[in-house]
Image (cartoon, rainbow, N blue to C red; front, side):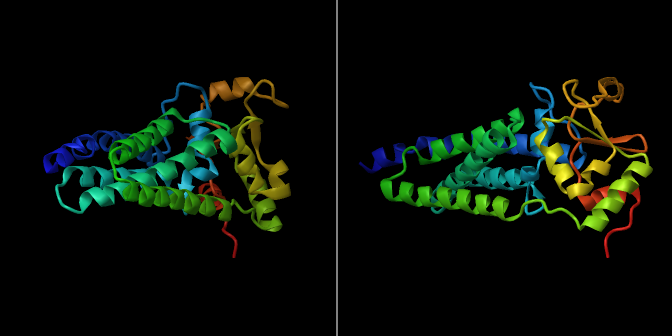
Length: 264
């Protein structure tokens, strides 16, 4: 019987490293792109940048990709070591990761209304890890894992709901918007882009003063040829002195890049 128990969980012992390594590679790739403000390879035009550049692309200011690197790195380490306690810890970690992945999938489908294939691949790796680790776990372990998954999902949801983008004061937003236009900065976007709306929302009523260029032919006052000439692929894309930044920016970043003094 003891021998049978040892054989009962071969997947956890020998295969959990596979989704862990895959998720780590994908997360590291996305983190590098975030660091260098690069574009994600995407099978559908525009949406990858929308997801990565959205308000949900960071957790308390930390890129989601960095959290993924830490999570999958820890899971990979636990899946490779051989100690008496690592299996239990890996179960809890995998369940929490699956709970977080469920939140990210729900955000893409229900809130951002855009899907990033690379992000979904990382989330699929988290689900696969949880399945491999938990498929043969005893009932008490499954209950503990379920609690960990629900708790992780709840905490992540509370963080996102509790830290929405906040507009600047009216005077500062108005001054910054006018300065951006006067300095030659340009915001390229599309009327349907969720994060373009979030970017404008940071300026409140002063958003109308932004140097905005509509890139979708169906949008109002569209300048499609101008967008094509600049090679715009991600919405929103900011241009400062000929340099393109393919993501949404905080007000502090906009002020810094355009040379506008920060609020007192």
